[in-house]
Image 1 (spheres, helix red, strand yellow):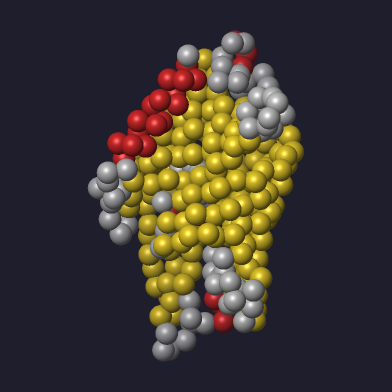
Image 2 (cartoon, one colour):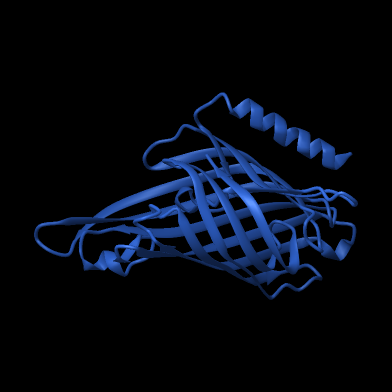
Length: 287
């Protein structure tokens, strides 16, 4: 009954928001706009046996935005029955994104710039698998550079072209995850956890000119370490590794539809994903 209620809330939010241009679809609002991963969908219905599906979806509505800040009200649903240890998590909350800009000069003729992006997310989380209710606060920081000099060939968050048909990009960032478990079946599972997170994305683009960078081979790692932990369950060091390939079917500015396949190993305690390894083939959408 609780599960159906959360699904209904998410569907209602989706159709209400579709009428507005400020509507967004992605995988999560924990990271900034420039690093947002697309939502994922997958479904399997064998002739004999139970159906399985993946929904990794975040729906957001922007309001009172400008060139330097962004406010988003959102709901997220992370459900995966394709894996050994199922995932079922519903989240809703508020996201604030702040952009700061500055210019610098490496020579006398060209101006360059760098941008700092701070993203703070406050939300309520319900983990249906473990019946946990928690409050979460996530702070994410990323630094971007836009330069016309040789520096643009080595700094992160830039498409680095090695030759006409091959390019790559690497994007590091850091995050701080705070979670207070309000309600749990076991009393000792209540408490506070603070996690420091290091994130690194690497994308390779073979046949970049021929395919217009539509084919992406990627490696993505999230390394977590619990800095403070007052609950009985020790996390210490956890990580999530994702590697695979994406092919862009449709793309228009920040909107895209992608067919992807990935190998995943590890866990994401913030989203209720337990330690395991699996392969996923999914349709990915971002608006």
